[in-house]
Every structure is written in C-alpha cells, then in structure tokens.
Image 1 (cartoon, rainbow, N blue to C red):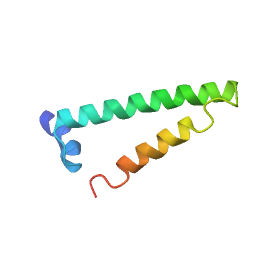
Image 2 (image 1 turned 45 degrees about the vertical axis):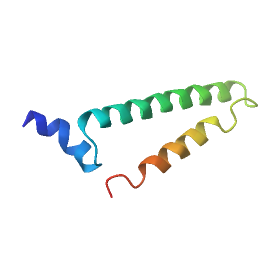
Image 3 (image 1 turned 180 degrees about the horizontal axis):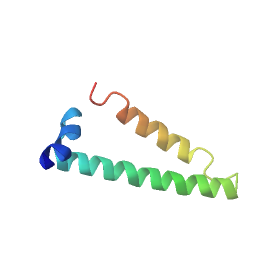
Image 4 (image 1 turned 135 degrees about the horizontal axis):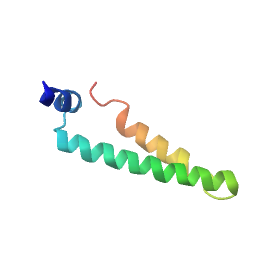
Length: 68
C-alpha cells in the first residue's frame, strides 16, 4: 500500500519514483527562480519583464501532455 502511494502517479507519466523526484525538483526550482524574477519585476518594472512568463511557458510545454 505505501509503495503504491509513491509509484502510481510517477508510473502514470512513465517515470520511476526517482525520475519523477528529479523532474519535480527541477520544476519547483524553476518556479522559485521565476517567482524571484517576478518579485524583482514588481519592484523595478523595467527588469525581468518576460523572465517569469517565459519560464512558466517552458514548464507548461514540458508538462501539458504528460501522461496523456
């Protein structure tokens, strides 16, 4: 039962637990960097104008058809 909790979703996107762990960790790190860029942009609008939106678009492109 416990193993199923950690393997069902990764298997649904054709990954092992550790492949999914790495993918999700990189995804989270990208979002953190994008959030930082958005904060910089909020404070100084001429900086990082498209950094966050480009990062989100790249992440979407990598994930929108996973498991389909």
